[in-house]
Image (cartoon, rainbow, N blue to C red; front, side, top):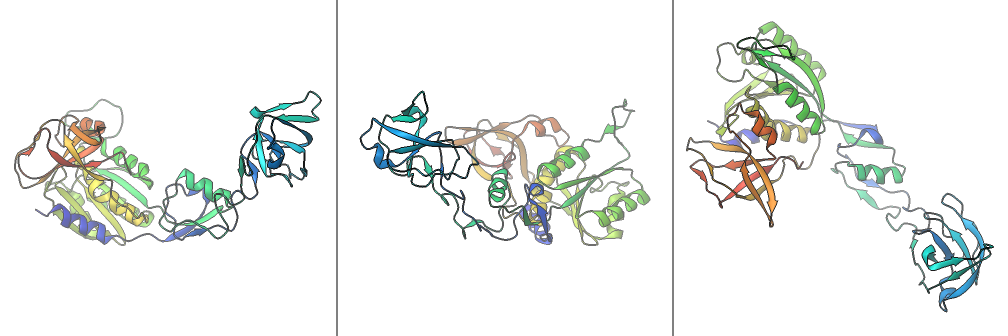
Length: 401
C-alpha cells in the first residue's frame, strides 16, 4: 500500500493552475485574483458626515449651549456647496458632503431645531473632526487594496465596486465533469428491483464540486460498457478541465473504467494506506486530470476531500488548498483495530472551553452515508488501537474552507 502523504504529493503535484481570464466583477465571487489591485481613487472620495445632524465650525460650540443660524440643508447626493461661516450651521444627512467652512458634525440628538427652521440650539461642544469621515480614510489613491492570490468574497466585491474596478483578472474556475458508473445503479424515484441501488455518489460529488466554487458538469450515469464509458470520457476530455468518476477503480471483474482509462490516458492505480477510500486512481486523458474515486459513498467523499478537492483548488489558484487540520480532544473512545492504515473517522466536532472535542457521528462503514452527512469533521486516527476518551487527536474540519 502507498502512504497517504506519497499519494497526495503525487496527485496534487501533478496538476497546475489554470489560465487566467478577465471577468465582470459580479461573476468572480470565490475566484482568485491574479494580480495586485491598486486604487486609483480615494475611499471615501470626499469628506462626509457619519451622522444626521448639523455641520458647524467646532469653535462656535465651545460655549455651548449656544444658538447658530441655519443656512441650508445638505442631503446625501447633494454637492454640499452651502458655505458655513462663523455662527452658522447647515442641516446635514448621513453620507452628505461636508460643506465649505465646516469642520465638525453635531448629531441631531444634541440639537433643538427652531419652529421656523432659522436657528438651531447646540447642547454640547464638539471637537474638530467630530463625526466626519475624511476623504481617503479607508483607502488612499495608490494603496494596494488586495494582493494577488486573494480569494474574492462578498466584502472584496464591495471594495472593488467602490473603486470602480468592474472587471478583474482572475484564475479560471475549473470545469469539473462528474460521472457515476455501474450496472447496479439507477437514477430516479422508481421502486428498486432486487440488486439495484440508487446513484447517490454523482449528486453528492456534483454538490461538493459546486460548494467548493468550481463549475460542476453532470455527465450522467454510465453503464459498465466499454463503448459507453469511452464515449463519456472522450466527451469530458473535450469539454472539461477535470473529470471525477465514481466506481470501477477496485479489482472487480466487470470494472471497465480501468480498461477504458488505460486505453485513453496515462493512469496510476493506487492502493492507499487509508480507510475508507483505499482504492484510488489518478492520471490524465489528454491534458485533463482524472480522479477515479471508489464507489462506496463514504469512500467517495473522503477521497474527494483528501485528493480531488486540494488538487482542484490548486488548479483554481487558491493559495491554501487544504481545510484546517487541528488538534482536538476525543470526547469518547475513538477505537479501531491495527491494520496498517490511517483511519478517517466521521465525527462531530464541537468547540468547547477553548478546544475542539470529537465524538462519532454514527456508523463508520464505508457504505454508511448518513454518518458522513451528519459529520462536520474527520478524525485522523493513526494505525493502532485508536484514541481513548480525553486523548489528543488530529481532526480535519469539513465546514471551514
